[in-house]
Amino acid sequence: MFEYLDGKLFCEEVDLDAIARAAGTPCYVYSSRSILEAYQAYDNAFGGMPHMVCYAVKANSTLGVLALLARAGAGFDIVSGGELYRVLRAGGDPSRVVFSGAGKTADEIQLALANGICNFNCESEAELVQIDAIAEKLGLVARFSLRVNPDVDAATHPYISTGLRDHKFGVDIGEAEGIYARARAFRHLRASGVSCHIGSQILDVSPILEAAGKVLSLIERLQAGGHPIDHVDLGGGLGIAYRMADRAPDIREFIEALRERIGRAGLTVMVEPGRSIAGPAGVLLTRVLYRKRSPSKEFVVVDAAMNDLIRPALYRSHHDILPLLHAPANAIVADVVGPICETGDFLARDRDLADVQPGEYLAIASAGAYGFAQSSNYNSRPRAAEVLVEGDAWRIVRERESYADLIRGETL
Image (cartoon, rainbow, N blue to C red; front, side):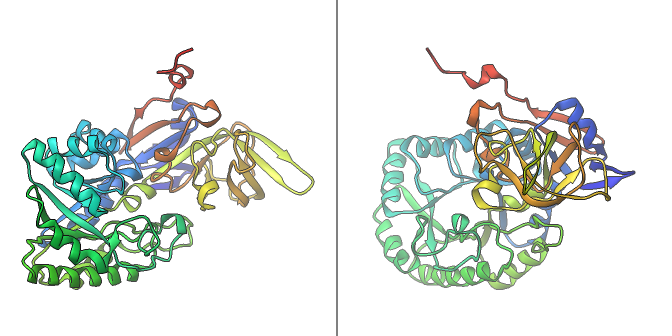
């Protein structure tokens, strides 16, 4: 949804240079068409198989994005009470919400039960005890899935790998049958499924399929033991192409492979994509402030920083950086850095760039997921504005923070 037309970079039918000048920078811009097409690729690929596509809210929790997906019929995967609040405010259906995460608090569990969410993905036996006690007080029965850890290596960055035995997530798959058996004693819990999520930014889907095979074998044993398992939740994690030369997994091919693996098990299938829906749909616009040269390096100093997009500093991740006005000639090699008082404040290092000058604009690509969602006010910097593009129109869906916003709630 981002391409050059007559030398200018467009999002759908909108000139990004016009957005940068009108909305200011730094500024996140999202393509509604890209978001919906990715969601529909998942949804349509399941065909007639019972399923639910639960968008992972942690990837991008902006109300405008959530509302777009809610209107399209998406379910939602949440990991906090705040994310549930956002989903409800955006018009999401709580009966299509699954609650994941290793550290759910009593207040969050009560909020989820009171709003009638679909299912809890539980990550410990102690969590089952907590949910049962709260459900009893409310006079409810909570549906749950145990998140099992299949000890499958997702072959991704260690910070976003979640399926090995030494990770904090889930329970060892070998202990699951015993936990389900003991959970029969809880009168206010119903074992409805089994869940699994092995990591994020996965470019080779074979580990996901391997994990699915292990989970399906477990479900067969649980069903044979009389547990009313009706669904399997295989999480998210499908990666995207952060470099133009890379190839991301095809969503339709991946879901078709899952369908073939699950076969005639008669289960509802849940998936929880986040990055693969929101990531390619967003760019971070930034303005060049200065050009600077040291004895060994060239620097392009911009007004976006690690507080706006922390992924390069945190994960050493790559984002393509494009000029809003196409300039194929006069390339330079430079570090793209921001105003934060940290050496780690960089958006790219030793990068081939257009020979941009102060006042010109750049787009940091594939920033729709884990961009604004992980941003902060470090160095007392107001967080960026967010814009949603729909065809030839655009609107601000989050206003840029002011200095007054920075101290809201504080006292002398």
